[in-house]
Image (cartoon, rainbow, N blue to C red; front, side, top):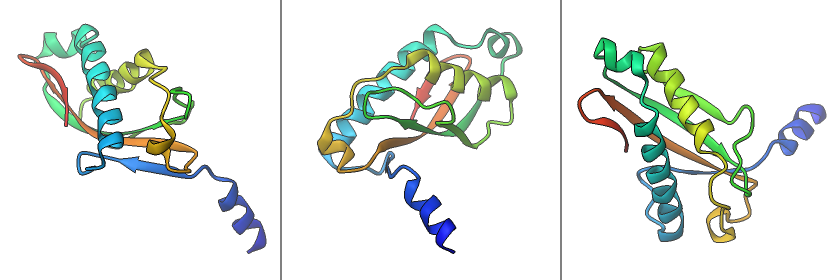
Length: 131
């Protein structure tokens, strides 16, 4: 029991933000992150998805360190699009965009990292959007 408690206490504390986040500083950071991801995603839209006319949405959780870097295991597909090419593209887009802006302390609120949870929508006729 003591071992488990120590292991849990060493895990980083994460502040989660999503579309429901209303606090201005956190919502502004997430909006800036979202705009960068969408810009990079539309410049690097998966060609295979365009060729095959694949559309889909997926839910992605992205951990961001205070310095804006994304840890090696910091990207999790919470809900797949059902198309490996789209899921892989979302992960690649996050990696291409890193590092992101340094996270302000008033956004972190004493946590070790920020987790942004967004739904990604790939549409061959409209491109990538997050919500």
